[in-house]
Length: 383
Image (tube, rainbow, N blue to C red; front, top):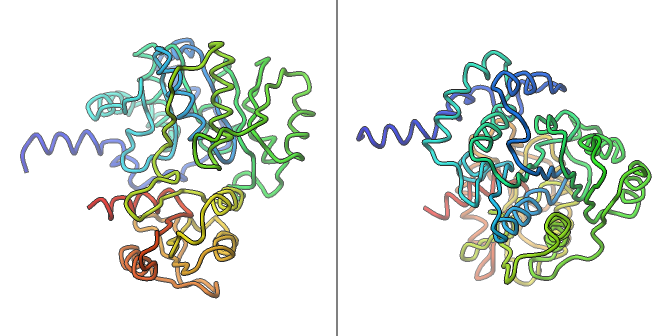
């Protein structure tokens, strides 16, 4: 192996190597004190991020953030974008003016942050937040579009105070951390709203919309009332929300803007359709938007904290040939076998993918249930 290859591998993997034995959902504590301490000691000032758009919700955060950042970039503004999770590389989470952070810059920022990460015992996501904010502060963006990771109240991005809060669709998810009450989940997410006077609201169920309006009665709420038709149905409401955000900030929209979905959101690669819908609300929207006659089989997996039986039930109501697999290399993956009738189960993802392809005949193969699974399958079919 050449020294250049070794250096490149080191740059790409420095962050992931450090957290290899920690994991994204380990060392979690319901506190902001660790990330606040690290950012303060690093000399970070949130003013360095420009105008901040802080996006919270259960479904639709990633595409709303992507659409918003792309439109701000198209209007000529330097825009930072922080989202999660990534599909192929951690760098995808930290984006400036449409470009992922380079391996060299990521390695440099991370290596300089290791003492703070160790001192404050930062989790995977807290450390990513630290690296992203420090990187963006060097580049002085006009706008920063920041997606919450999980929840809101104790999400590491909630150290930001002066911002435009954005609420996407709220549904049940991450019950182990956020609880089973939809209203409790809503409260956790609405906690990102501080002294901010204006709040952008995406499309929600009538009951959640009413609850949000009552809870935020002292705020100026700008609602999203109608979805856009320029993207597949589940994402139309997110595009409409993003347009509302940009119109509020700039008073205009970019001309001839062509929206691009984030990876693994109804992404088509040949006969494969990759979509990371991973909770009942998201899966319901996905199933509703798909043509059952064009889908010959479905490959699905999820993390163990998800209700895979509900996800497969939604799929089985419309599609045939449901194949369940595990997510390779993911300690949070469901484990087979499962007592779910009418499904085919195969632990090995590559074998399961081949089964799904064979069962589909000449029709398409839908891959869903987890962005982690979609990322794995994307690598397999790309190779």
